[in-house]
Image (tube, rainbow, N blue to C red; front, side, top):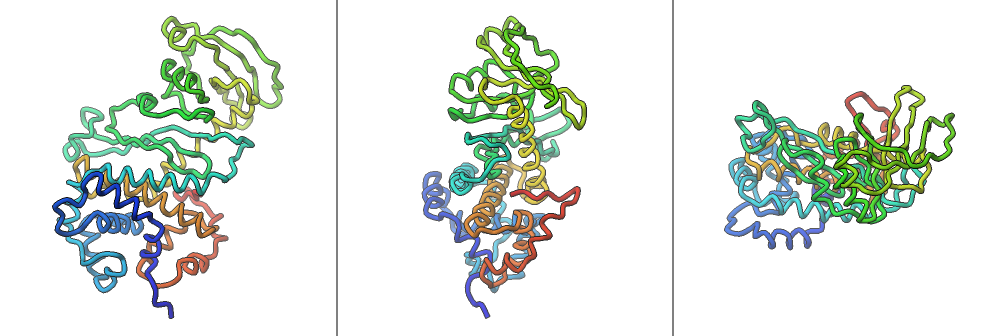
Length: 387
């Protein structure tokens, strides 16, 4: 009989607690705290994410029912919902944002050798945002529309391992293109984004930083052809052109040549027009890069389905951001566990196993190896297999 740590405690062992302590000290997270320090707050919120708890009352009831095992989770006693609510309300959300970045750096190092679907050695990012609708009367700070509130999660996803490398949480009114002002471009990397990010002044800033972008042209895109490269229309590439922007303001904001590729999808017969500042890669590779942007949409769908970010335990901006950042931390933490233990199961499967066995005392590898991973290949309309 195994009498060691619970599965939850073994998962928590993968967390760099020394770095966590430095971040808490930076923001004085434990100042004047008599109960529930930041370490315990994270454990409780991580437990809520892994087991998909519905509310603060739900969290309190579940932990109280396992009071004999709380010590082995790293908790000194059962957590009152009012205490947890106050902690989420008052402790700076930047503690969890900075800690998530620590986990993200660790995960990206682990997944750095993961192959892309394309034969490309460069880093490829997909940039997009997702909107979470809220009630305006309950979340008045989350401006969106006159009758609705919302928060936006702007995400830069590293396609090598499907790890978010940058996340910005804003109210619903912030336009996607403004996130380009916050990003620090990485020279040589590819940034794949949809038409909502077209702003030629901002795209030119990416170009000057040595980064490459791939996006789709809007229907009113105005440019004059400078040169046309030879193409094989049987591949779906209709034209591969070098163009100059013709609009008065656009030509001043982006005064250099752009590459325009017109592609006809063979399965839908839909014609797509791509814009990029990369002149070296084959046209089909540029088209494939944009197709891979869909991974960020799958990431949003997976997170919304499997983590607790659509309903919140608190109503203040600080509480909402705290919950979202801890959810991101849990996602990245499970990805780290999967990689370091060399597990074949998907993240979905790992979370499902953990949700019903966190209090079990067994070696973590045994908990996951006992599951028949052949079932991971079965997907349904509301279930995604990510990583």
